[in-house]
Image (cartoon, rainbow, N blue to C red; front, side, top):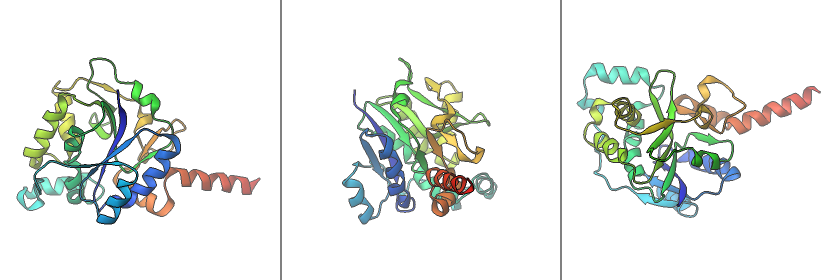
Amino acid sequence: MRKGILIGSDSKTEWLLPWWWKFYSKYNDFPVAIADFGLSPKMLKWCQKRFEVIFLKCPQEFVQRRSSLSKELALQWQQDYKGDVWQAREAWFKKPLACLQTPFDLTVWLDVDCEVCGPLKPLFEILPEGFELALIKEESQAYNSGVLLFAGKAPFLKKWAKLCLQENGKYMGDQNVLTELILAGKVRHTELDHKYNWQMRKGYNDAIVVAHWCAWGKECIQNCGGLHALKKKTLLRNRNKV
């Protein structure tokens, strides 16, 4: 069984890729595939030296624009997401299409704002026989698609991708679609320990394996370098106090 990591990026988020790779490769050597959501030529070359590049098979500009939505719905999404939701939607709805094209038999999807803080080998052992998907459930009872463990030919992938392609005007993002499918009993899933998709808005946790910075956290990555850098600065500060 071929196991591997799947990520996706476009020119708006590609600045995260060297940072992501630095910490992923520190702890892991599983092969990585990246879905090209619209990378710059320079970054595409960088990726081709390190990853297997997947070129998506999908229509161009299939994500409904703000102008086609009701003002009320557009305003609600802007309030719910702490970032540029319209830019983010362009990438979010490509995620299930990328997952459909995974080259692996067993795949871990990681958002590129996920900082890998340890070995991912134990994560690959979590999916029980007969299950399609493993992910975390948030306190809101929604499911988060930032870290996913799934079987390569899982039936839910086509359902998820179809809704994201054809009905994305009804949903803020891909994980809203996935949550609806799960709650409707259409996905054989199990829940992950939150250490594999720790939302950094909740603060630090000693058990973190994957730190998910989400929208607001990208500024922290830019300014501070993420969790590894913050821990290093804290360690140095504590040493200086001794």
